[in-house]
Length: 360
Ligand code: NAD
Image (cartoon, rainbow, N blue to C red; front, side, top):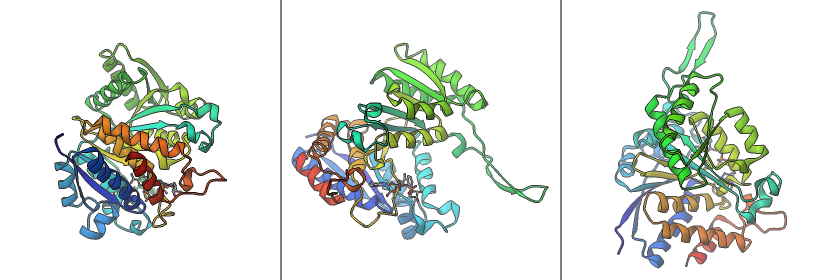
């Protein structure tokens, strides 16, 4: 019998609970049919946390996340909480948990399943076979830098300001994480920055080169963020692993996700220094389709697969889950977001049913 592993389940808001419900069915199936020995416990997070406990990251939730082996998150946010004071908004819960758990390394694979080549807005020959890993620094840079704020000026108007900074240690640990991932792949790493304009990027580039001395087998290149955006659309298959800071990674990874056709297909991981992580679909809470049972649960189910491989040491189960998803796509089942004009779209639960059947 394998040792038991615990998962904190944070369904969140909008379509979060709907897609998480399907991932939980997959966990149950892995326990029942594949002796996975996974335990799990749920806690409110984001808007749901605010509604129940007055905070987007309630103490019970943070406590559960800290004592679990890994965390599976649905999505947070929505119009219901837009008028809430800024420090209590759902998005603050997300920044808070990343910071409290030291989840500094955000991995976002962008893989195009051959079955979905037509779902991309780019020509199939440009994207077919695409397999990129974007490694984004997640707990530093301009999203966290102090000072920040909006203040009155002497001229009688207001001024908004933020601060971008990265220390040497912050850069070297994310660079190290990215080199390690490159070593497991095609051994090509592209570091994206804006070193022609920003001092922060100048230091970033210097440290990434320095850390690279420990990884002589990895071919390192550098690209400015504006060019990287262009290249990602023009010839995305030139990339293997991309490493970049918080704000550039936010933009690049969303752009990369669209290369694959649907944001409903893409998983992500945020890891700490010991490989413990929070796993979540790349998409948000999709208030426009929440409650309709039409959201694509695959991104969340693939996030669970990433968790099994990267944090729970169960690559065997991860492969089973990924193969089940692949089989369902090969059989032609599609939720609305990836459906072609002649497909009858499957519901969230029907997609879950099919993946479970393939897994059994
Ligand atoms: P979104 O990702 O929620 O939705 C963008 C579009 O993609 C929508 O048309 C939506 O219907 C569609 N979509 C998203 N996920 C889908 C799925 N699984 N299946 C089918 N279609 C899907 O982004 P948004 O509209 O910019 O943001 C909505 C809310 O989500 C906001 O409150 C935002 O702050 C929050 N958000 C949360 C996270 C997170 O929890 N990590 C990430 C991004 C946005």
